[in-house]
Length: 221
Image (cartoon, rainbow, N blue to C red; front, side, top):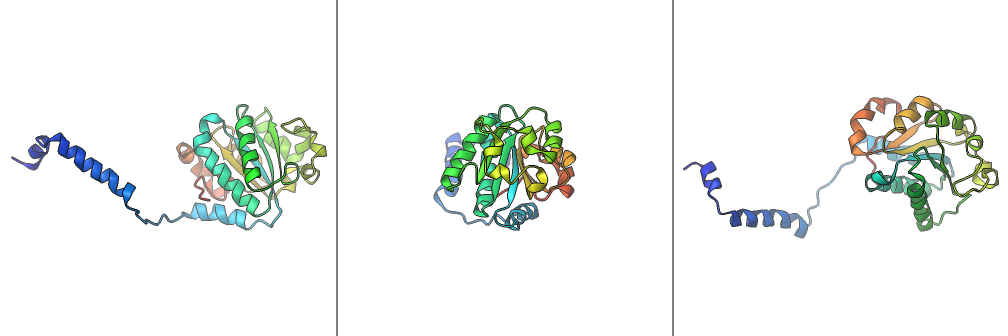
């Protein structure tokens, strides 16, 4: 009787015991296995780390509730790093199902890090138009968003009095679940570097833009 035949005749209770032991070991025993960061992750980190303190960062968050499980940690990680550098955040979304999710994340993170709305960050809400909006924002943010998400005139927000076009910011951080997203920002707005964050499923479709984009989707806080 060869070993394959012996395995076929093995009592299934023994198999269950072996599976239990295999699953229990990593749960009960701490395994210290180093997870080295990739060059892309290091580039992402260094790009933010090298920003002058107090820089204004443009933060389009282009995702919806269906992508929250994967993209919310990325957004929180990026916001944490930016706010540790005392950066100012100008956020909005091109996804019509995104404002509620994005606003909730911003408010929660701002509360944790003692950041004030209007001076440390603003959320402009949703604007339809996709690539057209991207091009228009490069010339005038207040022209595209005369009011923020809550209806306050953008001209009354202290942060927006410092920022009127994309060249008034230092960097674009785009957390995106698909179209429109990072590829379109790179295609339409070429005046600023773009740091992307997106679902693992979209890696293959975006690696072609890696030469034009600092960093990559992987982000570890």
